Image (cartoon, rainbow, N blue to C red; front, top):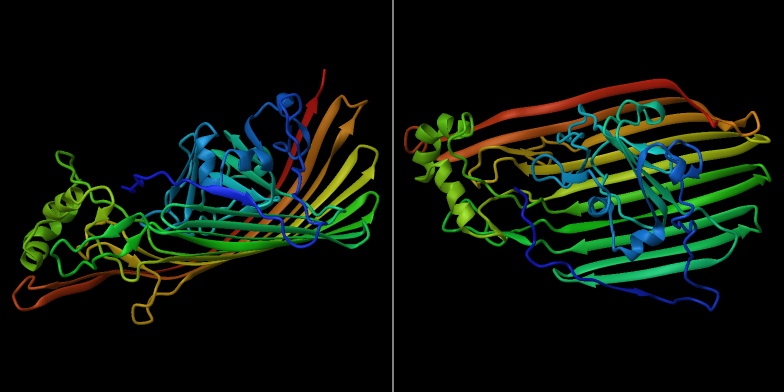
Length: 463
């Protein structure tokens, strides 16, 4: 069970005026008011009040005013949305909408909720804890969205749209501090390069916080005392170029980088009684391995863990870390063909490399460990490369009585999940003293290749 901090993180934000007198705060690009909230939930701009989808739409200004710092904070304002960290103690992101999602973070599992950044699909939960930096809007679409967003949106979709380069020089800086040594910072600069033809925009950010859970040896030599869990350390940035090639043709180039390098999540071991199958580890290993080696049963260890309180755990994880690095390149072409007919192309590549050390049982006894780090060269990080191409044609016809969107989409993904090693032991004194029991219960390498192609369309007639 994930530990919640007892102290609420309090923060102070400050706008920092830097540089010359020409630098000023960036205004919100989309002033969303009650009378006219513009959304793109159906891949075209339209009023939220006229969109037959359950949508929670927030502008960048809304996010800032409500203190929503990353994608996990959306559960505070969007109904039926929740976000859990990944399976085990990894810091990956698993999104659930109306109970639909995927807890497993393996490359052989796809989520039931699609996450999109400027139209680019985020296919893996590693690197999916998105920080809210320089955003135009966030839209949470609840319910099946397979018509326009594909097979991996049974539960819904989350659409992130960043601010695009503008024709004026402007900037924004922000710093935020809180307890547990929390420190967040953001800096955005918008720089026109060649008149109103070539524009650029750059953003960098960082967020860090100490862990609020620590390990406690509690007299057990196998547990490292004072090890910190559930900390935060993420940073990254974005670089954009906008080429206004003609009055009716705009090309956007986007590069996004994000890095996570932090400890594992601190978890508790819960004592469960009276449920068939709840004590399968104890039944298999207590008598011959765990008790002879430690002098305690698994149930005793779990109870001792509970007795330590809310911010202490009796566990050990070597190494205690989770890492993820993502690089995304995309090119978007918007072309007004004629009248009310629009063409859009989205081309993207997204690379993800990640590794995690997990203790799945959270009891400190070396039973169910899994790691992508080291272990004599047997363990390796997982690596995923995803490519996509989308073409859209949208517009209106018959005196604006008909709205339509047609498109084709291709997605390809290759993953080398490296090798996840699950060592068990050593158990000194187990079986026949002074012999020890030690084994590796799994050493798994996952190699996947996914391809998907589709054609989609939606037509509305306004009576």
